[in-house]
Image 1 (cartoon, rainbow over the protein chains, first blue to last red):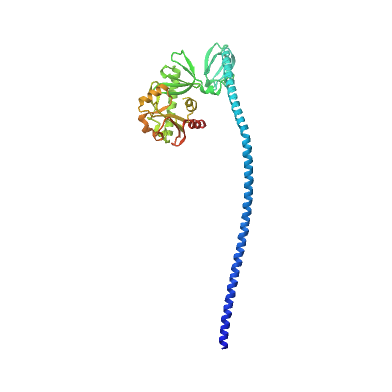
Image 2: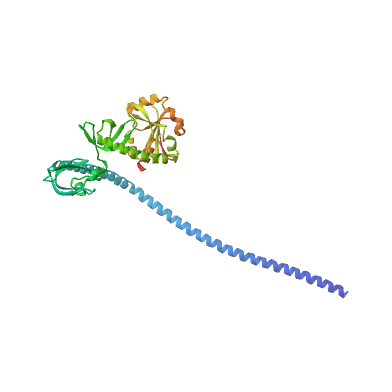
Length: 292
Length: 87
């Protein structure tokens, strides 16, 4: 009997122990879970505080934006006035620049006319040629002619723009633009001369294009002076080399490779002629249109 | 023509090409003579060779600015000439 009791006592003790362990383990889990929740809560609180800060900053920024927008709105008429004033001033400046240029050109023309008879002791061209005892005969847009030696009576000479000494470029007011542009174009019998920038020479058609300011002048190669023809032939040789380079460049283009040769035509005189591109542009303006 | 003379003719970076949508080259020539067009033309018999036909619209006139790689940069005369100013 006492053995049975002891057995049941042991069973009860084990059961009580198990129950106690169950409650203890549960308690531990709850404590851990509680700690985790507490930590999450602290984190959330911190985020919440941060969000409130951000919200405050946003509200402040919004207010500032509204303020700036209002200020901008109030400035708009002023900006409009200023841009109108600026446009007026720019137009005035443009006008004044035109006036200054016109006066400069007028003054220069008069000064060059009066240069006839001016004397110089000596000049040296950039090529090293020396002239002494000089008397100016004529100052032209593309050259200067003068007498030299014996008070300007022993010899006659003319210098093209590329041969002018720096002191003459300054003295006779040749501009960089003029030095680049000016070239005389004379007809075969020498009766008429114009000055302008060479634009193009088409060997096939013999058409020479010259720019006189914004105006385009077309000449027939055969009707130009020998000197002009010689210069144009040299130019044509240079152009051929450049055209070959351009064709190589055009071959690399999607657009240029298709139209560079045998596709385009240009009006020369009264008829269309094949037009081979002589440079490789980066851009094309294509105009789709018809006469109807 | 004025825009061409001022903005395109002096600019070596840009080539102006007239893609003629006339039925015949003779009609294109007649018009070119009347207006003395200084630019290059793609005449009707060269449409296919030019590779420019694919950009054409169903209306005329139509201006397009395209780069050398065939990418369209601007369409319509105002946009095209405004962009040419910036090139």
